[in-house]
Image (cartoon, rainbow, N blue to C red; front, side):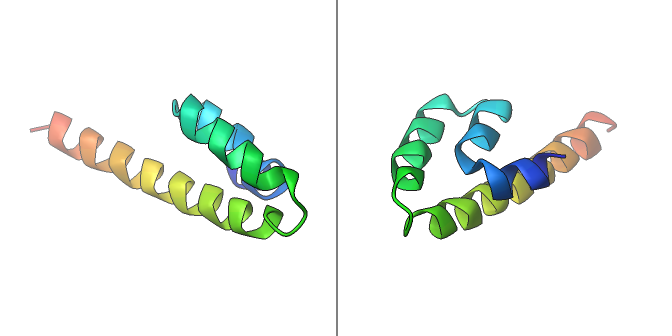
Length: 63
């Protein structure tokens, strides 16, 4: 669900993963039509990093 959100509304993904200031910066980038594609790529990348961080925390928590 977040992946679809990252493609359609890239700035909102940053709010869902707890990075509101980056979300505002992404919104500024997204306002321009040319900036939409880099904003979507950035949001997908940030989402993948967030998921990786969650998996690492989960693995270390089970120790």
